[in-house]
Every structure is written in structure tokens, then in C-alpha cells.
Image (cartoon, rainbow, N blue to C red; front, side, top):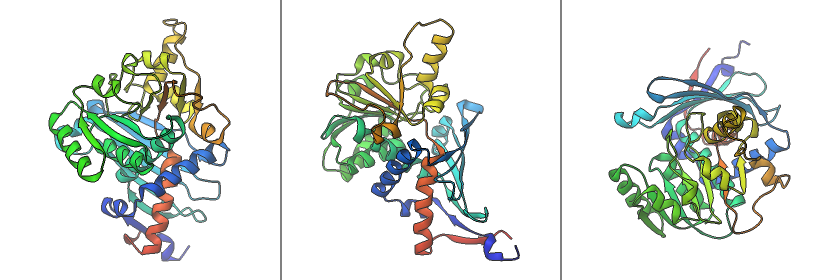
Length: 338
């Protein structure tokens, strides 16, 4: 093209991205993009997963908010064993294209984007599916996603109190100390996962567990359970009993969840092999619930389960806003790739 400006790419570090994230704004991007996806306005490529060592999973997502927007791709990995290395379990890089030229517009550290957009979407789901008012929130997990979910749900005034459990007593205590300083509601340590689930009306499971950490037998009527760690076929944060009990099962995308959401994929596989004659729930997409073209909560006694695997359009919606604000503020480092 002969124009070196076309090759300039804005590099945004983790610190840059974190400083540009406004949780309420991220929640708004997630609500809007789920609604647009349900209307057929969003372009979403198949989600790629590659298993790796120590239970790790590499992933690649690509999407366009509309056919006229630049494509966004996120490439990263979930490595549960990183906890022993004092590293985050999730690492990712996000690439944003110019719509017209296809040249790279920006490269972003994807970890804060992944964290914020996942929690933002869960807050959208909770506001649509949970019973009205503030909740006794239960969180299984004490990592970055647990912190982000508490922030997002509190941003929508959905939290009356929070109780948290994770296997590490040290991390539980650190989570509660930080949360107590940040919020003015009660922050408690749960004695067990069962203690947290059985005392909560809104439950978030934010782990990398391959085994259920939330059992249907623990869930009381009227509860909404949100799983963000059941993002791959071998990750199952909830058991079959919860699927059987749930009056409504909502997912971010029906086709993707059927293949890649651990609890749902397992239920479908068991039914197909004849191991179970039932137990396969009817799935509804969150965007359709938001648009009123799929059922939502109809009474205060229903148990509702939302399973998020994470989709590329969530990253594209969040990244587009972050890059736009970065450009307006002149943030990041411009690098000439010519």
C-alpha cells in the first residue's frame, strides 16, 4: 500500500487494558452483542480447542460484531497447573483488524478482556434469569474470575451478601479480605462447597475443575446457578442432577454448548449411547432470552442453570470498545510492522 501508517499497530499491555475497563460499560457491550447475535447480526467462527499437557486447553475465537466491523481474534490457553507456578490460569492475546484494510489495528493483552467480558456476560445472565432483588451470592472459586464476577454482579446491585469457598484456605481468606474492603455487604468464608451452594440464591462456579463442584442436591428452589468453568467437554463444574432439576437451561450458544460445555455434552453423549433415556435438557440461548424469543424465569421457585463456554463475539464487543477509548486517549504503544 506504500503507506506506513497502515502498518502501525497499537499495543495495549495488561495495565493499559485494565485501566481502560469500565465494568458497567463492559456489561453493556455484552448485553448488546448477545441481543445482536440472536438477531443474526453477528458473525461468529467455530470455536477451536486443543488439549495440551497437564490438563491445559489452548483456544482460538474469531468474530465480527457486524459484517462491516473489523474481525477480532483471541488466541490463548487455560492452564490449571499454573497455580503451582504462581501464574494466572488463563493467558490470551487479542488481535483487532481494521475493517476496511484488514491490517492489524491493535494487539491487546487478552487476560483482562477475558476476565471482564466473562463476568459481564454472567451479570447480564443473572439480571435476566435470577429472581428480582439482591441475592445471597455464593461463589465457588477464589481466583480472578471470582473477583470479577463479584464486581460485575455488585455493579448491577444484585448482591446482598457473598459467601465463598475454594480448596485453598489461604486464597479464600485473601479473597474475603479484599472483597470486604471493596464492598459494604457481608463477605463470608464458606465451610464447604455444599455450605456455599445450599445457603445461596445465586451461585457462581468459577473454577477449572474437571469434577462437579456444585451438586443438584444442594441447590434450593429459586436458585440461579451460573457456571463459567464448564467451558470444555472435560470440564464439569455441575453434576447431572442439577441438569435434571433445572426448570430452565440457558447457554451462550446452543450449538457450541451442545458440543463443548462439559455437563451438557456429557448428558447428550450418555443419551446417544443409550446409557440414559432422558436427562438431556432443552437449551435456550441467552440472546433469545434477552430478546424475548425464548422463555425466561416464570416464577420465584424455578431453578435455572446458565452455562457459559465463552464466545468470540464477547471478545470482539469488549475489545472494540477498549481500542476505541485507547485511540481517543492516545494510550498504548504504536509499533510499525511495515
